[in-house]
Image 1 (cartoon, rainbow, N blue to C red):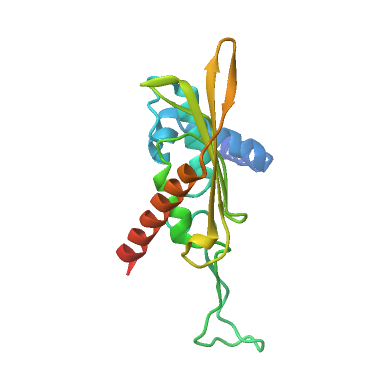
Image 2: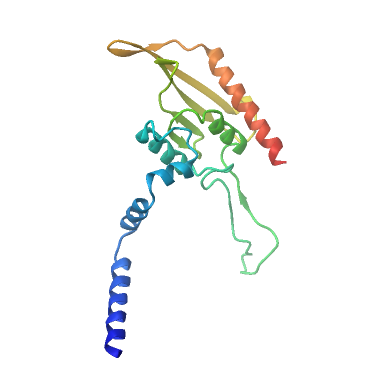
Length: 201
C-alpha cells in the first residue's frame, strides 16, 4: 500500500516537472491544438461557412479573434491601480483611453463583417480586408482599407479606400473605383457607429 502511494507520488511529480519545463510557445501550441477548428470558428463570429471553405473561414476567424472582439476590442481599455505615491489607496483611477473611437472601430468591423479580414490593428486604427467576390458576380472582386484616426465620432476620423479588379483570362485587371463608392461605405460605417453609441447610452 505504501509502495503504491510512493509510485503515485513519483509519477505526479514527474508529470508536474515535465509541464513546468515546457516553454510558453509549446504550451500555446498545445492549447491551440486542444481547440478544434470548428470551435475557433464558432467563437470568432465569422460569417464564412467552414463547410464551403474551411481555410478561408479559419483565416478570418483567427484574424477576428486577434482583434479581441467586443466594443473595446483586445486591450482597448485598461485601468491603472488606484494607489497613491505613498502606497495608500484613494478613490480615483486613471483610465487609459483607446487611440481611436471605439464606436467607429466596432461599426467598421460590423459593417464589413461579410468580407474576410486580412488584418486589423486597433492601435493604428487600420482594418484591411482580403479580396471578396459575390456568388452572383465571381469575375469581380474588391477589397477595402479602412483608416480610423482620432477619438471623436465624425467623418474626419474615417477614411475608406476601395480596390476592385475584374478577371480577364488569365489575370485580374484593376478597375477604377469612384470616390462616391468610398463615401457610401464611410456613411454606412458612421451610421452603424452612431447606432452603437445610442445603444450603449
